[in-house]
Amino acid sequence: MYIEDLKFSLWADFIERDYLDNEFKDLINEGIINGATSNPAIFKNAILTSPAYKEQLATLGHLSAKEKYEALAIYDITKAADILELLYQSGDDGYVSIEVDPFLSNDAEATIEEGKRLYGTIKRPNVMIKVPATEAGYIAMQALTARGIPVNATLIFKKEQAIKCAEAFKAGCKQNGSAVSTVISIFVSRVDRALDAELAKHKVDVALGGIYNAADIYKTIEEMQVPSCRALFASTGVKGDSLPAHYYIDGLLAYNTVNTAPVDTIKAFHANGKKKKSLPLPEGSIEDYFEKLECIGIDFEEVLDKQISDGLIAFEDAFREILESL
Image (cartoon, rainbow, N blue to C red; front, side, top):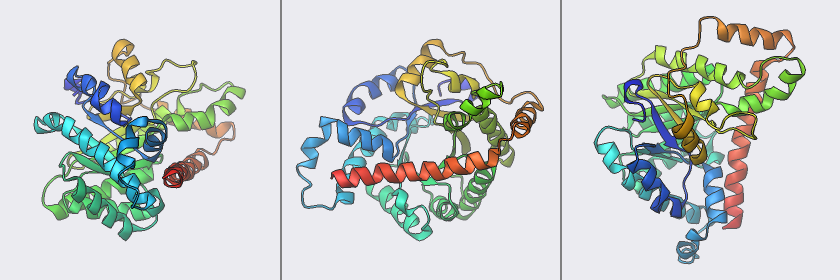
């Protein structure tokens, strides 16, 4: 744990082969991170920009584009899981996530089969299968956890999504007969980037919508008391210089949570973050803020729905670019 008394974990939202061999190990050995996450956009940037993949790619010419991608990604995830194994064995997280093909987000059976196949191929107990929070995804989450496979539910913007994820995990654990480690990944900064320009025009405080929304979802997850399930705050990097780099980690520091962030954000928090609990927020503050948004004509539910749609499209676009390049 990064902060033991809060049971607060800090995971790096980054995977790249040279990084795994060097800085990743340093961050773990220094007690700064105790897990990692990945997604199609992260792998796109790594595979398309790093020369570290050229040697392996040269041996994969006979494979399809998706098979090449999986070979590269599985190699990296396996390496990360092995590096994190000592943390996992000691009960200090040590998880790394790999996402299923985003084009399967509306196909429950295909998602289940791919999740089982990826987990079975990697053969590491500290790998989480990342599944988008769609109607098909909830079915897959339950089925995978029922088989004892750890799951990272991703792309959560709304409380209703989190509730369905938690219900799926609770049902899966019951079927499995024991608790299975899961996280519910709540996206944060994207909400503010969608809102803040309009809020500034009306002189309403900016860079709070994402935090208040995430805080509200966190409270709900905790109240549901799903065995071995935690809220994970994602999309916690900032854009530009108007906010401190560690703003979203500071603002969402809470008991029994994970924050996954870019490496530079993690370093900024480690050096200058406040490291004191921020949640729960004062009673009524969340409701008061969203009443302000309603008063100036912002349909917050509509904003969140668009973020869910845009997020799925972004993952698909990143995955498509990888496949086209391979």
